[in-house]
Length: 363
Image (cartoon, rainbow, N blue to C red):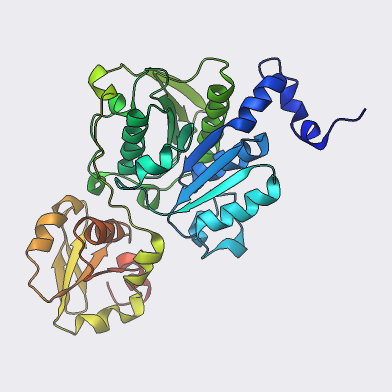
């Protein structure tokens, strides 16, 4: 008798001695939440869904940008401008109709994290910011669920499994979130697209190992991948018992969806015209203190970490124009002002002063 379509689909993994029919049943009964449908999340989803996970939650609050496509391989040109959750759902539903796909088009926060995560067996954390990673970790500790947290930047990446069978949590690696105003990101430091693919695939593999209870789960060990020399190293993570007794969630997040940032972006061509209006205040950013000039206008730059003090000094009623040399720090500043300070009277210059130089507006 020929195999059923279900058995034929998963046959190559079911014949593994560590998996078999019982393991496939565990996979089919598992409920996995993937937080972040970007580069890491795309790789995780593209392997967990074909593997036959019973229920997969896709959580993201962003829309797809053209600049995402070199690394977020789940998507295509036709998806640009769509919410990633919707584009991922449409693609994954075509991959495997047996999987119950759940869309969560929202921003994870202290008010919804516990309610959402409690419906899943484990979480694969694939966001691009520390506050979300800490929020996921803390919620998983409170709910007694494991989470697999990954990261990628430049040519390197890392991952580990946290809160697994009493093992270390993410706070055992990092006690508190670093200040995002001082950290490099994919937007300002870059990332080679294959790296999040490698890390995301390893996250998906750890998820399967947890579900079928096989192998040596990557708990208590941080696996670091260095792409420039194709090496892996492990760093032990020492458990701190106090991190296993988190009793409440803390909101650190101030990331901001791209579609909101676009509404507060100024094209280079209209920049100088806007400056003729005295209602504008310019804040310019650079790691090295210097003087920037556009036409008759000059500004002293400041490091990004001085933004909280600088915004307090802006006179009431003034609109704020955020500028930097490369066009990245100004968007980090915009995210901070909109989400952390609830300050919507700020705009960022698209592409920074480099664009103005191309237009001949700046020396």
